[in-house]
Length: 334
Image 1 (cartoon, rainbow, N blue to C red):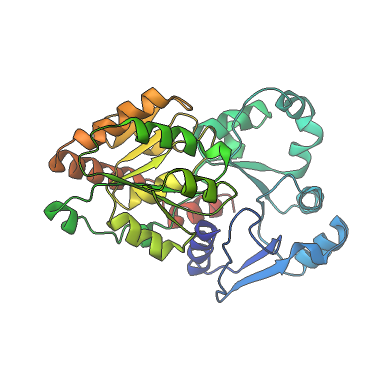
Image 2 (tube, rainbow, N blue to C red):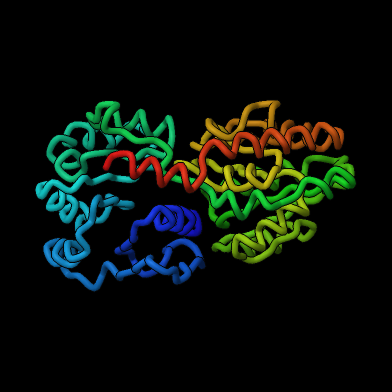
């Protein structure tokens, strides 16, 4: 994903080489990773078992191994082999504690997670809590495993918005049920006096044509690269993410970095880090049309100066984590 590439670049700029054994494509999006000098990409499925994966990865003499997908047993087993050889291993985690089957993970962590990984590299506070439940002490939990490509999104200038503030809500993401787009659209339709505001949705997914048919007055655009998303941000006045559940939702930091007020649900993990109620946006309960209406109306009724102030606050909060900081966090264990 683009945010991974930004971190890879930061690590490379610090004098390291990155070798990525990946699944060959991002399974849920149209994104394709670019070719970057000193970033070597290897198809994980070229290796039929964990032993061959480990042997191939060993030839690079890694100083550490990061697993970004512990659902892959091959990754886990290869990490266990590196851990036994003394190479530090980390598992990236955007997983929140939700109970249920996770109680089994907590029970068997000493024989699974702790056998594979020296560290859990958590996205934020909610993921830190899960790592603690897996039995990792604070010295073996790192934070801030993700960062938006702040260089791209922070290029969005506020100068033009100070002259004429754009009255447009912007959603960016997949068109699937878990994103809660139906809640947002119902809220939008129920607002009678929109005061010139419009709503734009950007992304791909199975529900896109349904929304396009049922809501002809909503602007719907296809998936686009981050450079184009930054342009959309420059022409929009508030980012909105109505998800029923988001383990992390890095997109919140991306558009905070683009200096936009944020409306999102409490089910978005990143909301706890990048959105403060009334400071740079509003956090509402998921699947609550009335709450969403109230938050959107607060944005609609805000003055240009109030919206500019919220925009400045968003950018300020977004700078707490950068690709360079993520790279330094990883290198801190060496």
